[in-house]
Structures are given as structure tokens and as C-alpha cells.
Length: 275
Ligand SMILES: C[S@@+](CC[C@H](N)C(=O)[O-])C[C@H]1O[C@@H](n2cnc3c(N)ncnc32)[C@H](O)[C@@H]1O
Image (tube, rainbow, N blue to C red; front, side):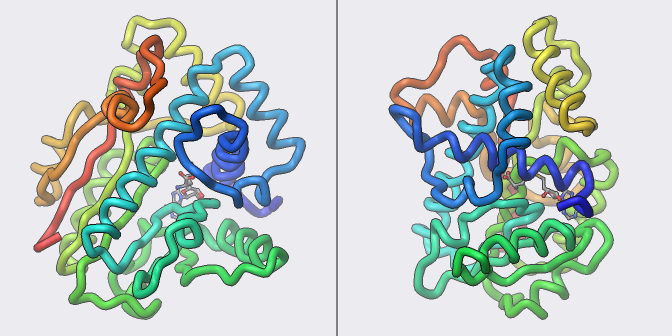
């Protein structure tokens, strides 16, 4: 675990939140595997950030539920290839395994190696994996090497990643995907710019952002208010735009109405080709 860098280490923290979902009265998702990636040190960090600012924890819970919902819906609509980009300890390849549906994890070498060791220790065979910095490789070619059919549609799940990347790199990466993959949908989350810039005027939101960055020693760099700039700069088509609050309203009978960040934490689905 010591060779995993700070951005990679955020995956442990997310697992530390996900493992607690089973204790909720109304769970938003099921991830029986999350606890495999968590130790007491990680639990202490999760407590450190959220004891004072419990709202922050809700964002990851609602985000996890949202992406489960998207993956379930897409597979239900016939999607047979799912790429989990910046996968960390996402276990959806196991949670959503189904005949004829192929999954592939993409993450840094050290993260995938650690995940592989944990899964094997529990007798679970990992799905296909592409260890790489996805900003620096020809991902389309690597997916073909991993057994993906370049002529069939793909769902690319890009959860908990965009905020760590400079905006220009996001544009360049999405352009390369569009040039290299015939037909895909990409689903991703992002904060409104005011959260990143600390201009919401809400001290609690700024304190949550600061606590997350300071404890995990990472920086959130990029936010978007909608998908218009991404449409312009990447040629992808916006298919869906919403917030975690929208998801909460449709999926959680007890969604909180007093957490303004839920409305400022957005998600988008963009498509290329027939995707
Ligand atoms: C916050 S975690 C999110 C993990 C997972 N998607 C989730 O939501 O639980 C971010 C993950 O993305 C990976 N990641 C970020 N940038 C990456 C890059 N350029 N190449 C490969 N992996 C990357 C990190 O290593 C880390 O595992």
C-alpha cells in the first residue's frame, strides 16, 4: 500500500465510507466488498473528516448510489461492455456481474496490484484490468488488447476523478476517447465551480472541501456548472445532466433536504457515435 500515491489513496477513503452503508436504515447501495480494503487507520481518517462535517459523507453515499443506478440502467438497456476508469476499489464488476457483460478496471499500477492481491486473498478473480495512467496511454488500443470489442458500444464509468484533473487534460482525454472509440457513453461526476473556487458563500461547504483536501493531501482543481464547455471542447454530446439531489429525490425516500452540497455535486452522461 505504501507505493500508492495520494490520489490513489483516496480510493481507500471512499471504501471506508462505502463499508458503512450496510449499517444504514435505508441503504442507497450494496457493496459487501468495501470492508476488504479498509483498516483502522482508514476508519480513523473517515471519522476525522466527517465527525465535524457529516454532510460530506452523504455526498459519497449518494454518488455511489447514483453510479449504481446508471450502471444498472445501462446494462438493463443492453450495454455489454463496462469500463471503470480510475476504478480504485470499485467492486461493481462483481456486484453487477451478468452473463455476457464484460468489465474492465483502469487505474494506476499500484492500485490495481493491491486490489488484485486483496481479491485473490478472498478467492475472487479480478475482472480484466489496465494498469496505467489513463491520461498517457492509448486507452482505446489497450481496451482492445484487454478483449473489448471496438465495434460494440461501451459504458465508461468515470466516478470520483474529474475534480483532481486540470481542465485542459480532461478536454484532451475526452477528445482522444472520441477519436479512438467508435461508440460510447461516459458517465462522470463533478462539482459546481463555486465549490472548487470556495465562492458558494456557505462556510460549511468550504470547510468540508478544506477538510477533505487537507486530510487526504489532495487538491480539487476542476469543476463545471453544466456540460456546455465539454460539448464545445470535446465534440461529445450531452445526454443527461443532474445533481445528487435529483438522484436523491428519485431514489431515496429519506433524502436530506438540508445539505446544499447535494445540489452542487453534479453528474453528466455524454455520448459519442451511437452510444
Ligand atoms: C477518488 S478515487 C475513486 C475511485 C472509484 N472510482 C470510486 O469512486 O470509488 C480516484 C481513483 O482514480 C485513480 N486515478 C486518478 N487519476 C488517474 C489516472 N490519470 N490514471 C489512472 N488512475 C487514476 C486513482 O488512482 C484512484 O484510485
